[in-house]
View 1: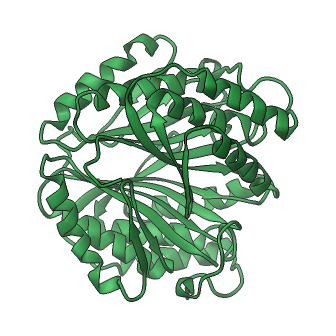
View 2: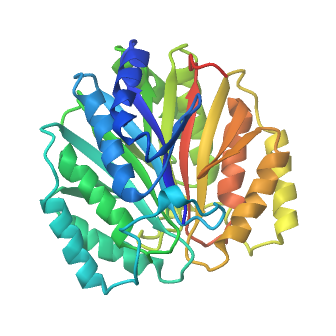
Length: 202
Length: 202
């Protein structure tokens, strides 16, 4: 199994470099357990979902706390058949057989309800893609049912689902959507946008 | 068939609202042929790929011409089984049967070589997802072969391919990747990031 994300942080300020460099310090506690590489368009994080989503949450929360309108964009992937196995990606979340949908939904809801609070409000929009099987939409609909019950659901949109709430609950919801739907060994991806401090009317 | 995108523009300046509002004027010539709706996190464009990609190109080019470091992020989709058919999405690109891979690669290269130039340099990173069939990676590898011959290829990365070059050629490459790989009636998506004027060392 190989899992990780290409992530980018966009602070809407002329001082964006300082906000990005400061927020990236939030990755320091993860550096021994995630492989991290940066180029001019994104930062690669390689590691298991149970580290990846908290790391994303902490980077984004650090940027949002500056008060600057900031967006995190991420392409998150697990199980891509084109990627090599990597021991750093070993995951408790993706071990074992695929349980019945109702059990997975119940575990996902329990995980979201025990998520730590950040006291930072944000909005997320994401698409979950389950590749390589004929009945991929059954897993998507099962995930949408979970999202609607998660407490973070805001709206279904074309191509995406919108969430809002405490940033801790949002990233817990995203982690559960990523890990609990689609086969544990399957190829699953998320296209994610998270936004805070937008001046747009809500 | 239903096709379109959720797009967001991120100008890295305190004056981001002005840059966004000005760049969105580039959508005006498309407004009678695309359905366009904006909320606080993204703008929805509904319409066929042959309008969608030029519209994205024009919005992004307008933002990039300001000289501000700007990023366009988009979740682009066609053929999602959960979306309704819509007459506005009727596409010449997706009519007819699925041709052999080599023919599709040849047509794609011809389209990129005749793309209009914008004289704006940009960098793109994207992932192509082909859903609902067991052999989805064959189409992905066929697309990657096309990309490597397109003249815009920069690098293969984990989870994504990086392109660079004239913004006209970039969006032509993306349009071809989206339309020519995966079945014409299939569910295909792209997770896209395009960046210009980044101060990061290249």
